[in-house]
Image (tube, rainbow, N blue to C red):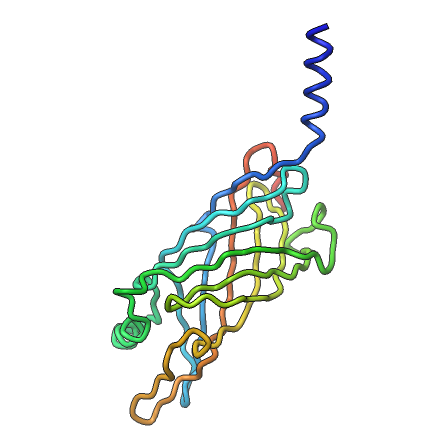
Length: 200
């Protein structure tokens, strides 16, 4: 009798989904940005960030929530003088982190279970971005798929720095646009039971 009850409980529990926390694989991920100045554009990148996501155990292609933390003083525009100006502008000594909290994901197109790099699923993601101790809602589209031991999410978005209380940058004859373009690739490590064969 105990064996039967145990089997029934096991079957019942296996039919329920639960949230699984998966860590961000920083080496496979990137966060890049492009600023627009009067005479030219310039590129930048976050060199130190961390995070994790919660995924559905039955639908591991779906991110339920996520948190990404970025170290402000470890961002670079690949030019030391410009980086110093950026750090002063961001007040990194009192604003050491930027963060994004993902709150909701909506499927727009595709089948997440069979999505691949060549045919990814398309999602609308909604969350809160915090910069300069100011939190604002952020909504953008993203692409997602499983690839071997990874869950991959990529996309682009735009951020208006004036919305976060940051002043417009003016130096001599150069003015930097308040809008910054952001590109991201976030790769999360899946547990063995949720991995799929690597694509070739």
